[in-house]
Amino acid sequence: MRRLAIVLVSAIVVAGAGCSRGGVHSGQAVVDVEKGSRVLIGERDQGLRLVEGRRTVHLGAQVKVLAGSASIALDDGGRLDVRRGSEVALGLPVSLVAEDLLVTSGDRPVVVAVAGSKVSVDGVARLTRDLAVSAATYRGKVTLRSAARSLVVPALRQAEVPSLGVVQAEPDPLDYDVGDTWDRRFLGAAMDLTEQLQSRSDGFSKQLEPGEGHTPGFYRVLIPALEHEPGFGDDLLSATTDPGDTLVGAAIAVTGRIGTFVERWDAVFGFHGQGATWGLVALDQQVNDADALVQTVDVAIGNQSFAFAPTPTVALVSNAPTAVPVAPAPASPGTAPAAAPAAAPAPPATSALPAPGAPLVTLPELPTLIPPPDANSPGVLAPLLDVVADTLGGLLNPAP
Image (cartoon, rainbow, N blue to C red):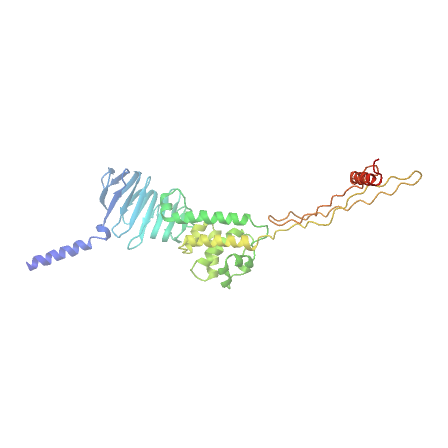
């Protein structure tokens, strides 16, 4: 019995050593075919066969996706995602035969052979094989090796090997596609943030006058946090950068926490200057609260509208009485005509329209002139005088 127990324990230890994370045995992989997809799998010397559901395969197996997608769990905890057009060979290392491959590393980096070059993924990356070999890093880093040349591609950047032994000198910002499912999975938040920040940047630049928005004091008013950054000065501002981009970049720099303020400023505008969208720049600076960043930009734009709004001009309206022209009296026979009276001065012109809601000073109304009584007119008192005269006449001269 004791010997039997030792044998059972030894068998368990050996079996455990042959397994890895997720229950995948060493030297094997598990393929999960998405429902409705058409995936071909070929085991070693066997031909490709259409499979469905979950299938365990061994090293050397080949997976080709005709439609839909599938995922492949590796024995070290790594994962490969394949989609329509993708074809991979599960060897040591994994080989990308055609199209795209999404690689997620596990306990150790996943090495993928592509067209004579090798790509080591320590994180999450999209690999593509067409006219050139390219790698786009979502998280972590990727190391490209081709012949004697190599290049490290950090997160949110990409690089390619156009031909064997030729590697880019520096990586480029990741060029994503908003319609790509893999890009949307890992960069969806950055895509949405880019739309919000870029629209605000464009609108802010358009509302400024030419020459505005190129001084440190201008941005200190908009973003009060810049007052506490002694490194913020004229040397950080560029005359060729749109004020809206400067505003958004400054908001990211004061929100980020990587390095000093000047280092963050240089990293923000250096990455954006290479072509990175604002969402990628914020993600690169580990800005975790996108809503707070957008709010910082909105408050800054509101501060600009309040602090630099032009003072409304109120028109001054003269209340001096308007001169009334008087017609010249007719000249007597034999006398020279009288000189025409001097023209009344024109009322002063207003310099601008009065501001909305400003009280207007109105001209006083001219009194109504009563014309002098006509000599031939009996006047208003004539009837009254007649009554008085008749009464007195009756008293003084009574009737017989």
